[in-house]
Image 1 (cartoon, rainbow, N blue to C red):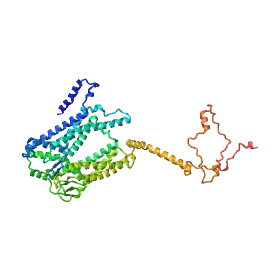
Image 2 (image 1 turned 30 degrees about the vertical axis):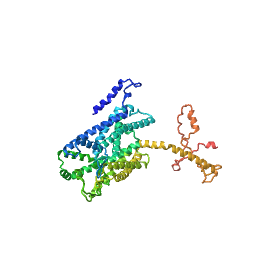
Image 3 (image 1 turned 45 degrees about the vertical axis):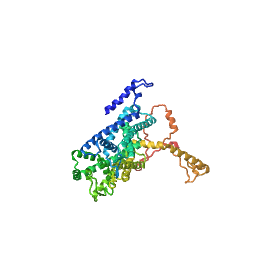
Image 4 (image 1 turned 135 degrees about the vertical axis):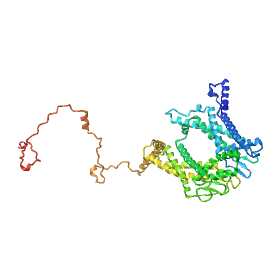
Length: 552
């Protein structure tokens, strides 16, 4: 299929290159427009995805009882198309309720296909040649900001070019595959296909235009730090949830085997059942994250699986649900798992400060709590996608409550991230010079410079007005009348002090005009007629005055 698309990509160019068009000078001028490339990529994704799911559905139709998927091959194709819609998490209306608990693992197939289609679309439209990702060194800041905005606009245009025709084709499929039993929600179909195609197409275009490191720099530094820290916290919690799910399966593996034996699906049916459970494994991982966060999850109305206790009723006969714990109170050591979100928040706070330190005390804890808000919103969104209804009233609520997970993760991760970010930022500022902190402080100083100047002008104006009305204090010390020695001791002015840099004018003049060199006279011999008065010798020394003749 990819080779066929490559041939389709080169055929129009070869044809157009042979037609003399006014103003056309090269191959870049006859490239296919971006919306056309997006439409071809969307059609390719739908074709490949439906082919894969139709093959799997056909195998299940052969192994299943007759009439399970509808009469003949049209029922197989209809079931494959509805599976494709379910892979994008589009809900269905069924008799007596709705079907919203869909396997998130099935979303991996359209996501990979859309990513590959986005790469092909970007290469087909020559987006790399339209706007290079790198700039020469020492480029002006205005030029770099303009290039960044142009790159973001180009990525968004590519995402829309792929998502719009993809959602339109999906809506047509939803209208065609409706029947009396399952009716897809058209709004869910359009929104889910549009969002998934836009995200995959934007990421693929960003990767085509430049490497990941360059494309991540399109985001501002602060936003990049918050996103990286939130992704780290969410990843740690998801890994912990996956470990809990695997541990529960290992501990309760006998119950899982018993449920599989009760179903007795056979060889082909067993393989399909194993595939279905693998597709629901990502839902189970998110449920494990909700369990770690504290709210837990439900397996029907009136049920709860949380660290504080387990209350279960009759659960669906899916072997994967055999790993659920038994009803009753949980051991005290299970409450230790609630510390994992706090640990994830601590790691996220340190990581955010390492990427973008804050020059102030209060800035880092606030950005750490913002990281908790983003992590909580992402965790709540995943919780909403992982749960849903399975038909009637008893199974109308399966999975974690999205708002409870969002609130718990926000508080746990936000508080821990704020504390760790504040401590890490304090360490960077006061335990060593950090160029990143200095750079951030310089940015803050440059941003607040107009405010400081305006404040100085206001202060000078207020001082001038107060001076006119006689309310202003003198700027310098008050000078007393008369000589300073005539004043009292309490009002005496400070005596001038000669500074260290004072220079004698005579010394400087002597340095400028050094005296002529002369021969030094030899030292005179000591005079013996002068006696030292300090050496009294007990009164036996006679003192002779050599200057007595001068006083006569």
